[in-house]
Length: 367
Image 1 (tube, one colour):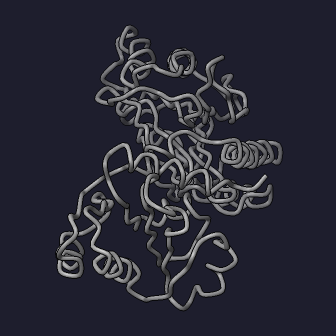
Image 2 (cartoon, helix red, strand yellow):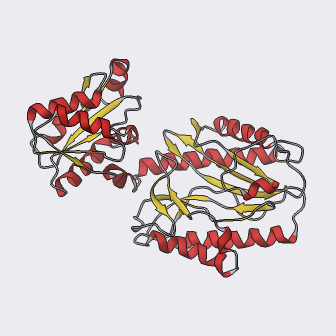
Image 3 (spheres, rainbow, N blue to C red):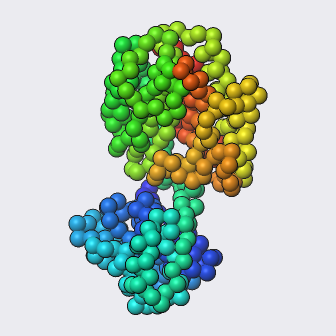
């Protein structure tokens, strides 16, 4: 089943009309991919509101000559124009038609770009509208969930093979483990990796976003693996924490605590739930155990065409979860200089309860 880019543009046009906006200039390349399927490195897209005459027929994508063939293949349903300064070219065309308003993605447009555009279209009202397409992207359609599921499957399979072949063992370095895990994701069908794989052993596991080093894994270490696969532009995100050879009582205790917190966070995922309340459900488990100050980050985030996207799930987060949102749940407890645990899944919010996409066991595993 191919992506329905036309329906996505229709939803955007309706959102523009609801806000009394004539058109939106889309310059965020991820949003352009979402709305059209185009994956080149230079483009702009002009989308008119739903009540505009021939709104879809007036939609135009602009890119430069390097992508002449690609834009024709990837976006056969839209008119394409070729210009190196793609956004400026579309702004000029807007200026000639003099619409009453033109919205732009102010969260990605520089001050200098805005000043230049104001000269190109002096009679148009340029309206800053941040995050409009990102709001639409929060709810994943079946096509998107299929790609997310495939990315999670590749990551699950890679981790399983890493452990089966003895790749997680004393004497190896963090970098060696990370490189092997990344290669295995590719071998299991990933188009790429979601981000640089985190392998954090021993005391390094207490650093939430530790970058792999030449540190050598040793018996008794916590080893935290935070990694993801990318399939068709969509990303998975998963963290599992293991113990090498033998687990001390304190390690079993902190692992069980984080596992209870993660379960509470997963159980709180419901359409309509306040994101801060979801964070609170998981955070209270750790706070009640006396370790609240050791949970150093938010509970999770949206995931899709970007590894971090809306919604953000944290203490200061705003808004509610929507049915079909893809999110992570990833509490952690970190004892500086000693070690830490994080457990993370990628899930889809559903009315009947969250759909789990990362299926590797979360039981404490000693390897």
